Length: 541
Image 1 (cartoon, rainbow, N blue to C red):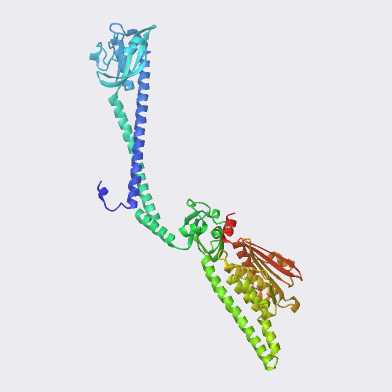
Image 2 (image 1 turned 60 degrees about the vertical axis):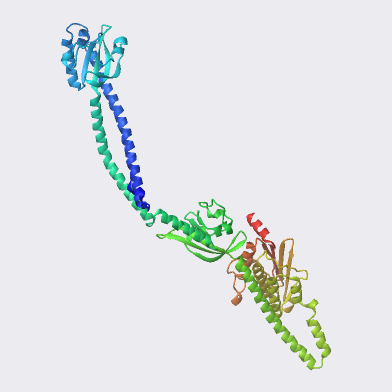
């Protein structure tokens, strides 16, 4: 065909129309051929049964039985056979005797002659009744041949024939009728093919297959080049799209498409987005021990939610940078407090010297700069993590301003580790210390005491913060970690500190607990895995 030499491929609409039209035509042709064969077989079987019935009827006529084989018998048999032939419409009825001589024939001049066809042997030799095909004096025909018996003795036979040309003509008429009925079906099929091709073209937004393939390649390349992880689900929460970054962050292997998203992200909120139809932007999420910043957006079609898409990015690098910045800020805050304290101490020393109290001034200087008595020196010596050291120095300065005693256990130790998020440690320690400081800030001086301990050993980090405040009321214990809930009132009531601490401890696969006595103070204990390998192993478990 001409279009085989085309450089540009046929349009998808044309391809679909030609393909469906070809399938429709081929199907109708197969149906026609099968129907033609079935009709042919049934027509021949029906005509054979008709011929056999006529032959048996003729063989049972008494006058035919008595006159076959007798001289002048054709004068009786011929009128009977011709009358039946004209009434039934068969091509010929030939009655013959045991010598195979004719006693009836549509052509009277052939009466008395030997029958032609050579298929009378079984009926003459064995007295059988059967259907035969043979070429007689009138041409190819299908014959029903039965014996004629008179008084218990076979005297001849009768052959009722239908010309095969007549069968073919009848079959041709039936086939033409069948085709006349199939043509409207073919027209409907072609119209359906045209509609299907148009609908497919519309469904693909007018794009050809090569254009769709190019767009898919571009989309895959674009998605894999994005550092953010992207996943999409259908209306039933099954994974329909995932890029390379998402596979790496979530540890998803090949063959995940079509599976429920819950199987890969146990704490995903995509099913909630599918139900609510509301977007969730800039949400933090813990996945396999990693903190992710996630955006979840529902996909709408004609006002109905048909899926959802989520984009997320690992916050580890951002948190590391934030931790370094936070450490610098905390050190600056500590330096500001120390600068204020040293200015006051220098003024005190200057006053003692002016008063002539040189000895007391020396004692004051020695006490001020004694390493053994300086909490700041203990922090610098024992706390090797810059972010943790910075938050402790800042809280020491704040406690001095509020006249609160912050006691740091002499055995405390924390190394500079990169396997655990320092920013998480800063948030946990900072919130627990701030809550403890606020709990005792308004109490008498003898109760303004806060104790802090941190141990880094056996691949675990243990943090303990205790105070001598009023403790936690029983009615508040069940709501301490709720977002927005606070036991304080006024400007100090925020309700996010313990909520954030709880989330961070869970993100690190750690544990948090507390013991409180009303009127006797509260102690908080946090137990964290020190290495990222433990965090990942716990997440997999």
